[in-house]
Length: 143
Image (tube, rainbow, N blue to C red; front, top):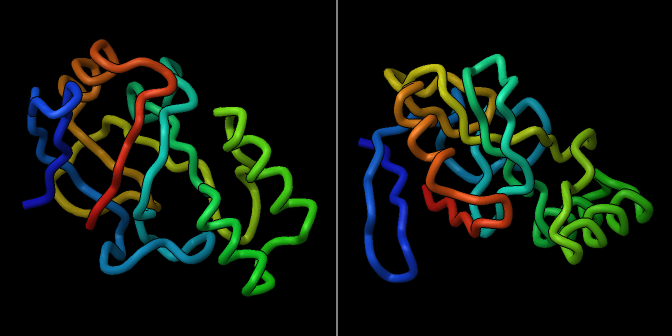
């Protein structure tokens, strides 16, 4: 069973059942691979107009992803600079690169791993989560 755990500092507040990308084994490497990224992120936006009810935008790609992308010739030096600058300023990192982007925690159901790399919950659960967290909240994804 896949879970999302919400903490308030060290105190576990709530555990939710979730679904991941359609190819959930391993860390996201590139756009379209169906994997959910692993690592440390933050919420950069709350989206109340999501096609999956509500969503929380995650700061993917992060600096580690940008380093890998530059090393593996998936992104340019300019894209690397844009991503790392945005992360340093706690803003939305560049979304449309060969690394992929637009990774969200969203509604739409959690029966199977079905997303393109996002984390999916039931609609009632994403509503509850959106009400409890703020933009800037730290997120750690471990698969």
